[in-house]
Image (cartoon, rainbow, N blue to C red; front, top):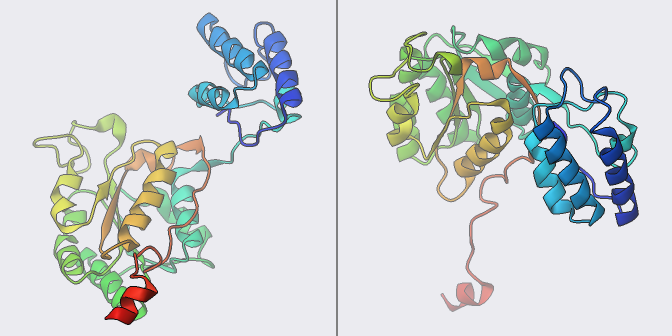
Length: 288
């Protein structure tokens, strides 16, 4: 994905714009893997003209539309002026790295046909995060609940799709009732197979409908269907889990999202427990 990560001074922006205007219509080599259509060239030239006017916010929005194209190695016009490529990561890597950055030490979960895409990643990071595999999904969620009650720090659970994830409904209801925070990562069917009933898909009323089963017993359920949706979903999930009244939150990840790749920017970890609670003013406390 072409992305504007660092804004340079207007002179650099104009220089990059001139380079874009001259290179885009004629030279396709710095866009890896495909040729530009007439419409794509026109959109990119329009972005270059905007940058010449130093309206960099519009440039960032325009160039973000080209997220499926990668900047090739011979793109000095962009790289020399602060246009940088974000790291390309698998969905499983995004999840595991975010858990590590959030200082979540354990993932309690079971291997299943829906979540095999993240197991290798967790194993490779075993010196920084530990996967503990109990005998039953319900036990995994009870372990996460108990960990928060003792340490006041959240951990994650990992379950497969279909009936396997349905087994955590009861412990999540208990955690929600007692304000115990945990991140329940559940797997789902591949997005290409939505509404085709593979992998014990729950689709009686809506495709890949596990979030509707779990919503009554969590603060919120998120279902990112692309890798580039994961950073925001992870940040919002952990923030919701720990803000206000703590409680469980669900992140439902389709099978293919674990292994698909995209250029993503890792979000900042959510604030820790009680960091966002509003407090009374010192005068009001004294008055009491």
